[in-house]
Amino acid sequence: MHGPPLVGWLLVLLCATAGGYCLAQARTGPAAHRVAARGEALMGLGMAAMALPVSAVVPPWWSPWVFTAVFGAVGLWALARRHGHHTVGALAMVYMALAMAAGQAGGGQSADLTHTQHAAPGGAPLLTGLLLAYYTVFVLAAGVRLVPAAAVAADGPVPAAAPGRPAMVRACQVAMGMAMFAMLLTV
Image (cartoon, rainbow, N blue to C red; front, side, top):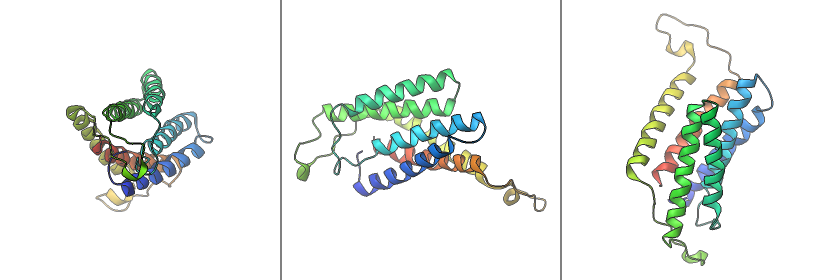
């Protein structure tokens, strides 16, 4: 990932934690909940791997192509299952992997870790802007849905729904949406 190493490591921590939690939740609950949790787990763990700072871990030359293949397949699967958000997320990962490959092809990395140069960003500004707009709207909308009903009721207290696993998966979606936004800023 381009950008400061501290930001990269924080993204790795956030995405790996959210992905690990969703992976644990993918074993219980109703079928729709398990499918959503699996998709979020794959996205979270993939984002964690992609966010590794290049100053600490030099990715092999073939890693962007592995990300492209895996998330291209995930995008097609999500499209076939009509999971719009997972489709956009997988295609955003493919886009970032191809931008990473373009940056590597431009000769942006040296073998000497003490003098590692960051590859030049390789994304298309219009597509990056559209994805940033999507994730801005997604995070704001998903964040609003996390607010308990009692906190937004205008005519007195309304009992809020009991917190549970679906709410935590939605919270992971918000966290990973913010992480995707941050990763897109570095493309």
